[in-house]
Image (cartoon, rainbow, N blue to C red; front, side, top):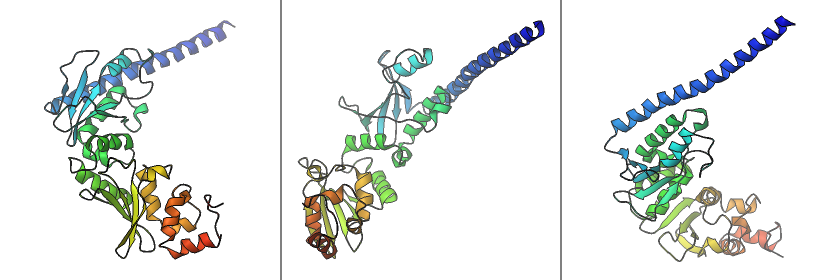
Length: 291
């Protein structure tokens, strides 16, 4: 009995030592990450530095190629000091302030940028990777996973010639095969059956989302002045562009549950595309807006 008790106590001690060792290892890895973070800041001291405001409103300033950024530090410092204290942001790094290149604005946008797999690396490494990403913000903009950052940048600059114009043009082409015309204020994409689709109204403050028009062999016609009034995903380019790339063919395949459900758009397209007009008139398909 005595030997079994001693063996059990020994096993408990071993488990305790393993636990303490794992906790100690997390601290060691964070200290290694801190040196990594320090090196990045020192190597880019002209573009990464601590702001002039003291805690609790202090920021780490990062000057990217496309914009300026502020990383709020108080939440990060508190999380390192005691991660069990209730924080304003329950998960991940705090949102980053996005400011136009060359100036600071009060009504800034924010972006939630989380390094991929950051839950499996030390917190100091996560912060360092975030800074590296902001320093190379052209690559960050091109990353399909960083929609929050991209939306903040588009809201900051709008659809005009700006520091992000060339990068956004390349992104749209690489990701969707689409083209943006900044002078006309529209995005175009090739569809099926000779159609080219145009999402316009980028410069028009009265357009809530996009106008939609199309052309075949040069003839241009408008289908809706504003998708805001007739669609659910009216602002989502990640939905609209892939869908339009398959249109008008997709309208006959009953695969689309938004654009093809718009009575205004479908009736307008049918005026210029006989197969859709025939399907509507013959009741070959079930359109939800047809009684």
